Length: 149
Image (cartoon, rainbow, N blue to C red; front, side):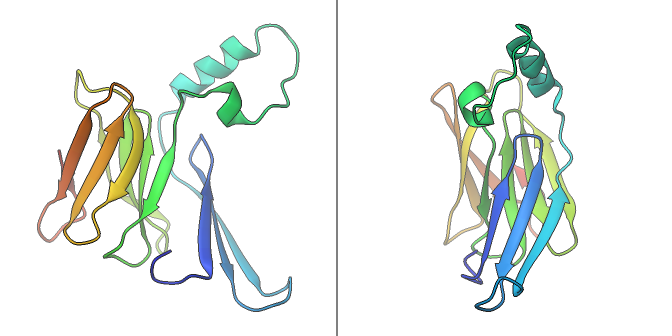
């Protein structure tokens, strides 16, 4: 978190977000919030069914089992409590304080799945890398947390 070095997050493939803030030096001085970012997980569920077809349990990390199902997030350098999250086919602007999605957009037709997200520290732009090698730029609409490609 660019606003608080004691705060960090971890994100799961199905949108489970763990927000952790270290408040002191002991184990009791850690604040943990469990949040859920709503997203369409039907593609991941299909991959899980296909991977589990043999009837054996897999103990590998999800990232190893589903290497092309990429979920990433980045903290906003301009807005406190805001994270930008990319699921394979969706961009979400999520408010950690109010625990809600402020904006969500699906990928336009013909655009490859998201691979990574990087907010520009100087202007209100998001750069997104795609699996097909493209780079998209998303600009924030003035006065809103809506982003346009």
